[in-house]
Length: 78
Image (tube, rainbow, N blue to C red; front, side):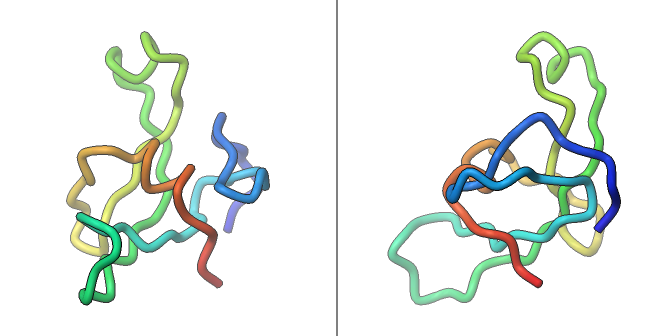
């Protein structure tokens, strides 16, 4: 975890930092374990227009389509 704050809070209302990890699920409930993703800084024009400075990506660097839902619907993994 870094000390740089993303402008979003998790499901429990906790601050989210770049480097925090969450489990992403396609659907819930699910029999699949989910994909571990990391919160990364994303200052793309699309994100800035939505007042967001974050995205999430898997271990291969693939971005997940809805970072907002992954973070606000989940809790941090240690």
